[in-house]
Image 1: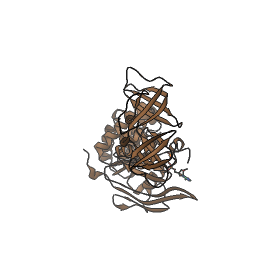
Image 2: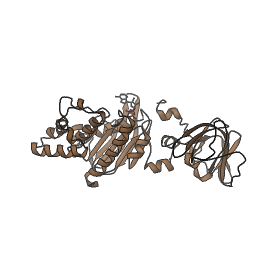
Image 3: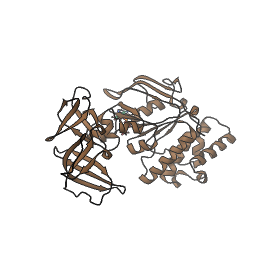
Image 4: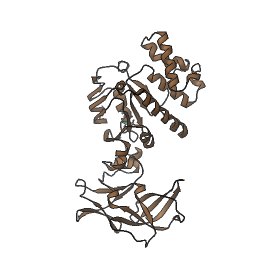
Length: 373
Ligand code: ATP
């Protein structure tokens, strides 16, 4: 039974971590509620693992404070924080059986033998490995080894479980299945989970809330839905889900912000956001494609372009359209009897209010992949 009281709150307050002159974490603050599934998402090098490590006590702080369950843990060594940790690489003891691996944290805590056996059996059942108790790690698949690592991290009933890319070394199918397992275990335990990934689909599948990291800072915290529908920065909007990003000179016209894209103008209800350059972000399902000459209603934005890619998705088609300024629009549309051909001229259409106007932070594909770090 999920019991939120079993999970500990985590408070990260103004945490900074520097290595020499390099700032890996820059004044990060975040509250994680008891029993929450919080995911740290962001490109490589953005500070996710460092944040996890300062919570666990593997990395010391340069400034700031961490509380776990309302207790300040700044001076507590990692092994006294009562936190379970799972890494990408299973780090199991190769010479011990599965049962002995899982029993190890209980042994360290001097839990009596009978109680130890009961808890190991219970935990192996939870990760569905009861029949593998007497095997050694080398006799298990990658997914099974990772479930042993999970069992070992949770067997002593910690109020907080930290996981750093635990599924990173597994193939896609197995990863998706284990995501469901982790979700189930989280529900059944009621423990607070903090999970690190750079995979936005994984973050959306698992989390109650997601903290998006960029260059040692948290850009936004919210549910997957918040981040997808209401990104507060262009970086977040681009990192979560697919999008079309339009950039160009802007001006205010009759209460709307108009943006010039190539030779055309599009507009968005409302004032520019901030004083700098502006960008419009549009989600693929908000865009429809029309053939030139089709009649459109008022209140729509339209831009001409050429189909440059068509990807069949089963439930529909994803089209990429190259616009006249060279940028790329992405539309996900239902299958029709008359699909668009590569190179065909189309009109990209969306309702003005269906886009998001954001300050242009210059974020690019390279920044999303972490290559600009
Ligand atoms: P990844 O997904 O690649 O693991 P991450 O978001 O978890 O990335 P961190 O591991 O937190 O990133 O690293 C943040 C930054 O701190 C990186 O630029 C990294 O090179 C730097 N860093 C981490 N550990 C050290 C260290 N011991 N000495 C110097 N720099 C470090």
